[in-house]
Length: 229
Image 1 (cartoon, rainbow, N blue to C red):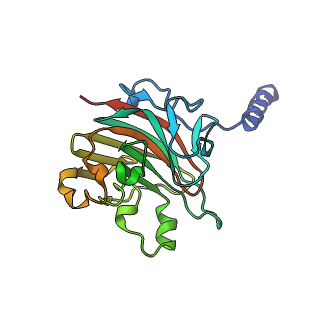
Image 2 (spheres, rainbow, N blue to C red; image 1 turned 90 degrees about the vertical axis):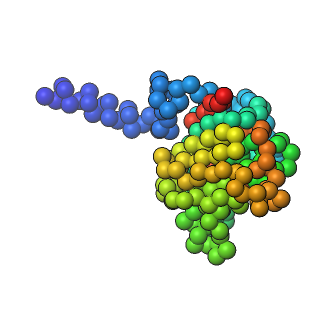
Image 3 (tube, helix red, strand yellow; image 1 turned 135 degrees about the horizontal axis):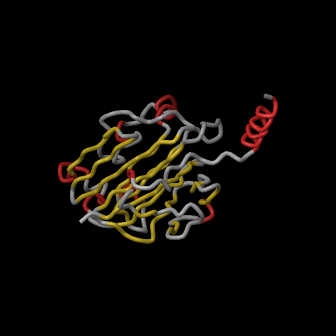
């Protein structure tokens, strides 16, 4: 009996000593990524370029992360018109120095200028922390919103420290956003012409996909895109 228990004990000890790997289903066959192409290879920043400082971005243990240098974007080399994109993201635990996490996914954005206005930003935010600390926070600034334009219809953000998955589809003038399987935006951009002046990117039909560096570290994985006909 002890002969059987000892190997199991050793196995448990070895597993405990092994470095934890991030839960990642990007290598599973089929599934939601069937027909999609990796935008992030899990190893380096090949295929990406920074509108700000490249040193604000890094890759570690198969994850892409921003250090939070503020204000810049990491953009795909390629431009996309009609497409679907998946991005997994994880917000950090809030700190007294930097507060709650803040980032975004840019779509149809030019390389120059602020993608939140010159393109479109799908907001990523620690909603709980910002609701508590920013009295003037607007619904169009919450996770899953088309930033400044269309508020999320539902809240589906997981607690800080957990992975979230956002799925964005841009097809012509129609943009949808799903957060953790919950549809938060189903928008006809032409129904928001009153926002075109402040957000001229709403009129664009092509541009880069990007990730935002804001105030603190945010992690990303499983970034996949599929162009639509």
